[in-house]
Length: 528
Ligand code: AMP
Image 1 (cartoon, protein in one colour):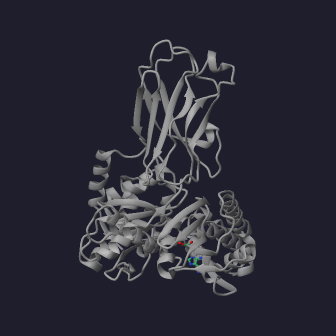
Image 2: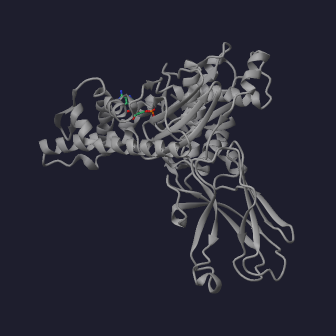
């Protein structure tokens, strides 16, 4: 059975598979395009348009359209209502996955079941789980989720077969997100050294700056008018802004015409103006890149051989200019729109074969090579437990109000799988009957012990501690994180051997809710 790789992007999505010759092939959608805009338009109840047609329809009725929802994946309580039905980001993603799967089914004439879906490297457990759920809601068997930069590196390595050990810096600036990752490739093996990024930094931010520029120009020309409350006008300006931005990658000046309340304004913009308006955005990506390079250096990778450009926004000439000047390394633009889906398809095959699936279309020799490949990713954010600060005088008298902080047992950058072994902590008070083990995940790019900079992602209770345990008695906590990101936590009281073990229970849907969402999504008439 063919396995598929899906790039479920913030702005565009794409599906690929490996053909009988072992080459990754990207599937064209119903409009004969390789990528499908991640935009949905709810025409009527349970009738949804996806992709380019949805983008066009959004111009007519913006309130029926949704885009950039990937930014909310895994966030509790975020819902988008259309025609009386409420959609979670995972359900919206599921509709896109179904549309991509349908395109692949049409092309190959066989059902799509096993998939690998890519995620930004800095996605935490909740976002990764929401992505898996989107796959399950779409009726797919998600073999794994894979970091986008790893997918890009797999694809690059597949196409260029570099000799020996090389280090790549992947600079991925897409429509909605940015990440940068240092990766070591050695023959068939790929290992992430470190990663950094910003989930709210992508082409859409450039579009917003241009949109504001266009609106200002319009209002200056027609001072009596305020078009900003008009949703349709705003949507049109946004589309114009994106087009202008893309065209300015090829030409030095461009104009567009805006219309509102019977008035028009033709607004010209130069590439230089665009670069001046957005210089701080590009600077931010470069700061994050330098921080990532510094992290790699601290991890014993002093240098890298080349820079891999991924994501549509890297087509802007300013990106290339600045990176060339800053890094002085060869830049490789390697199919910025398709590389991630191709790499995901390669990884889907690796997962299938390593998982023991027999593929009659693959020779035993090739299967053996695939089995020996290693793809190692690192934790993008640290995991830890909450502890009571025993330097706080309230720790003994009023532990509920005393300061608490997070000790990261698995810091960001730890290679997977990882096992901390038993780490010792102490009980907080005398005769403590039980311990609530709270597992927290680092929320931002930088590690911090403050609760406000971490997110509670699960908990378990170690009960029935022996009586009369003095305060500070040893409790051992072990974190084990599997290759696929499943965290198992064990807490043990060594005197009595009393222990509790739990797999991380993260927010999200249980099986019944997934089944319900699947039924709801299945009722939809999808067209693209
Ligand atoms: P991706 O998420 O990788 O599909 O990238 C989509 C983003 O790339 C969108 O914000 C596009 O507007 C942007 N993009 C695509 N082509 C160009 C181009 N020629 N110049 C600048 N930005 C582009």
